[in-house]
Length: 357
Image (cartoon, rainbow, N blue to C red):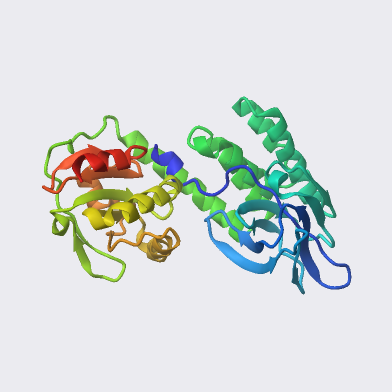
């Protein structure tokens, strides 16, 4: 995947909210859903940098009813509600008094629900419901849908949702959304994070443009150049120390959405074959000020192998230069003899592994 897409994160359809507030008794989020009996419910405030702030938890009863309360009004913003295995996003303007929703948990991802009490949520629900019904067929239809957003935060959210997979091609749309959001919520985390995202898109476009020809310095059959860098704890890890094992050399970063999406499969393969001589050596392209996010991503994604390294130099990463890495995720499968046996084995990682394990 091109680097332009690597910054994209969680904002993919479907998205939906389940909320309710009690008049005179503070504020709450309440739902009544069939097929949602006895499920853990978690509410978090979500941001464009993929950080999530816990708000509250509850457990649905045998009839699928739940409620999350707090004394003060919920802040204006984007929220993530997890009900069992369902993960839903929604937007509120912070002025809501009482919001209700009812329906079937199996169809909430298509917004086949009844909502009361929030004009902002109702607006958003109508837009997303229509997207499901009409199936957008072109960027022009996506742009028209974005303009139906009832405030600049919603428009920015929809821009990322509907055009995010081709951010580089629609940079002007992202800039327009960022400008509107900055004027609407000046100085807010939403506005600053979105502006930062625009800068990252532009940086990645520049990186991609600088590459006129693919780098073919690393080829199948050659000895893998050694990498020796510190891990999060400062301890040095060397790729050469794993000779005798089959190793997946994985270039990734905490900010790279496609990398994060690929991680569960790598973890699955690692757990299945780690006792048969398979290991992973992860090189992060995080920034100097991004060490904490790197460490957090390792924990969040369950990357339990020992060898995590980085010089925290972003696209100026020394090993990335040696291996000709100009987009991530980028992987190299290395045989027991230290030679490259496959480049970018993604969907066929297990099959390539079994050839040499």
